[in-house]
Image 1 (cartoon, rainbow, N blue to C red):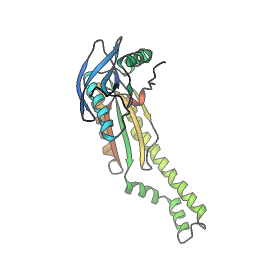
Image 2: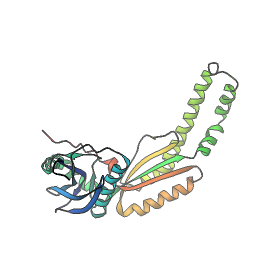
Image 3: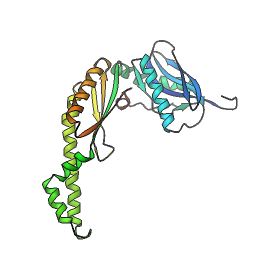
Image 4: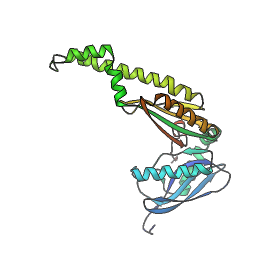
Length: 254
């Protein structure tokens, strides 16, 4: 960094540790930066010195943040995630933040120690979804009713058709929740679903899993995939820190 550039402290995650740690180097926007810890009691923030500016959440920057946290997770089994792009003016500011957050960290450490987050999205294959919708008696009847009619003349039937298709997708989502989510939930310490991000998505789930059960969980995901392989695609991700199970507000008291 040039002398004119103002230096900031970018934070990646919180960890539980009794000593100062160095996690090597990471490349941030083409420059090598050292990953170090800023400590308070048995907690620390993993951070790097960076130019003081806004970091845009482009693909490279998001991947950089993700890779840094994954690197830390290989050496520490109690990692509290911090969202992308948090830059503070000084190490002292981060120290104040950490002191303020410590009561929350103290509660979270035993809850997330030795645990990882795994994500699973179940996306219906186009052909299968269409077969489920088109094979429905009510939809067949409504489809015939709108054929050859103008949009205005068939308005009511079209509204019914859209509603009937939505009901079928809702039923398929309920089926995925019962047959995929619920059995996996039994292996997890905690599990949650969030709203699907597309019409074809039947399940958008996150699981908090003990590291020593991760292989068993992977096996159960593979078994579920084999049963549903002709109908859906699985997007399975992780291990991550507990992004969906930790709610930390990063604020420094004035």
